[in-house]
Amino acid sequence: MSFAYAFDNPDGTYFTTTPVVQWVDAFTRYHYCDIVVNSLDHCIKNKGLQLHAWVIMPNHIHLIISRIGPYSLSDIMRDFKKFTSNEIKKAIREIPESRRNWMLWLFESAGKNNSNNEAFQFWQQENYPVELTTPEFTKQKLNYIHNNPVTARLVDAPERYVYS
View 1 (cartoon, rainbow, N blue to C red):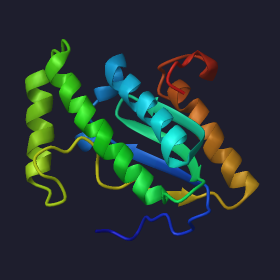
View 2 (view 1 turned 45 degrees about the vertical axis):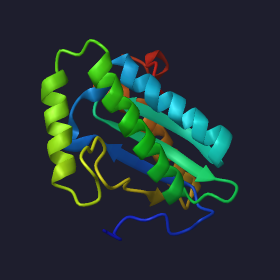
View 3 (view 1 turned 90 degrees about the vertical axis):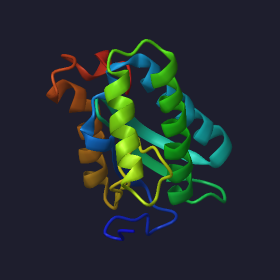
View 4 (view 1 turned 60 degrees about the vertical axis):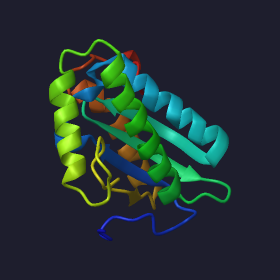
């Protein structure tokens, strides 16, 4: 396990980046995006996740998060990633997906090659948390999240992006 990136301050606010394995463009399908949104909502209501800002890009998500209550951010993110991984695997198998065989093969191969998983890996291991320690740094990351879809040319204005 890597300790280069960690939620060191239990009461801190963090900017995180959570990429899909091999940076696969999974979130070009709204079904998978909805799984992420619903899981974030569950974590807010049941695990004490404080979600300050978020964006779902085609192959990764960015969050600005903190927590209240007994659950650590590490535990919340672990549970979030495990749940969404399982739900997205089910969705890949059940909904029309032109890339089904390739995606399942890729995510199953990644899981088999990672001792932290049993047989399937959707998310990369790291969350890349960076604690937001100043108002300036927080504003920079907030602007980055909101402008990421514009920079990627997915929309022409931040407010036009649905998954943010």
